Image (cartoon, rainbow, N blue to C red; front, top):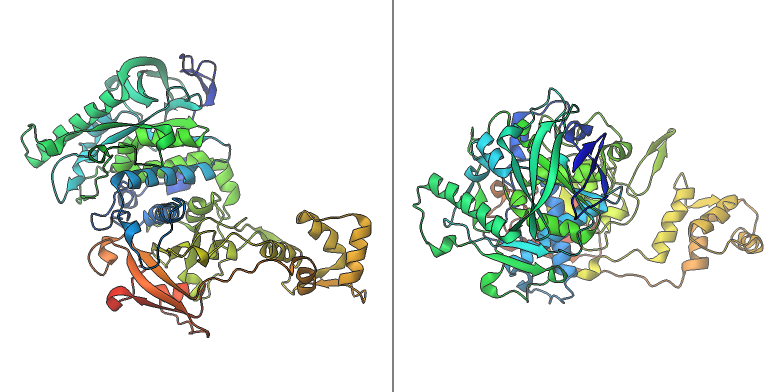
Length: 601
């Protein structure tokens, strides 16, 4: 690419004539995430990758407070996809779904990350942040990307790297310039030490030769497609990483078969299936690895060095997103994986659009003192909208418009703050399409889910009509002005012929009182709608990614038998999972395994 004004024009054969905006972190992305200054302690809490528990293959591990704002929504989408998108029927009280191959877990994570990014793409383009020059970055940071990931069970790299071939269909993938921090917040990468930056595109490696920075501070790159295959490149990276790990652990290099790297090529059409890959060749996540951050291992200026070594790959198709994530998966499993995903999310959403959706733009997405994610960040991950509130639709209070959730979510959200009377979650989040909920306490996010599909359902026409009626019932009195009937029916795509509207007005307001009751409207048009009756007894599971919060000292799903009684069991002010669940099922009782309630903090 060559830099021209604020755009990068690709002149290589693959992307001849395409034009893509040049992105950088100085578009307000850093400030909207971290605030005006980045606290080293807060930043270090977010330094971790997407790693799985050795005791529960599907459970993501959280190392310290903060990243639950990303990990819990990702975990929720993983459970939704694994339990309900596979087409398999799960028998009651069967835990067979908990046993799955590493490849299944790998593809679940890739597709869920892709889904979250795609649903947030305000412009239709997903922007993926990856490391620009991994080796140079490790040199600058003292090999921190290798040093913080230590195998607790066994030494060696057995993870296979998946490269999804897409040679003939990568026109939607564009390479963009490396990110640069705003003046005074960071330092640009020394390009004299990074002449060649390998970039995987399709099954080849594009070699970007760095030149002097332009006057605007952005790096100029010239693209030349090389002959080295992505498989060769990836094995080379693994060999280098293995050498570094061996040096740290004092292991002499040798032909240990446990350190053998396996490169697997997967057809793009088979990205949801592992049946086509021999068992011994399946991609393996390091489920036996736990990332350990030692105090003092991170340089104080680690965020400056990271920001100066990020590049963006943009793509406008879901399959391309999955491909790029797969090719750069080591970045996302590494120490800065969650931060890279967070930057991808914000750049994909667009800072301007993000600020329009947030209510208090002075507050960053990550609390600058305690490091926890805001409700806007959680909503962005769950719904693709960075609104601050959890109620349905927009509300107007004293002339101030407050933005809410615009439609029924795929996975839901419940919070203990509703039990404490601080807020009220709307039905869009409380009754999602699938029985998976992110659970919010005052300080932490966990996940509750059930294998019982009939617990939730797509909104019925009657529920949609009831919600539309509420938009015209400003005071919540269950009636609207008769004159609003035509607009209401138009919003529901119903017949609005003038004669028909007059007929309906006379029928629903026979005494000419000027009002139409909610029940009268629903009885007239939606009395024959099928009513959804959820089961009274079901299995419930709880996930808490924090190792120190688990009762067993292991990150594992906790199973409970839930029963909805015929009368309200009452709600207390205790910060418990049950009280949080009572905001959806006031009559619920749950008997958890080991007879101990799972903690939500």
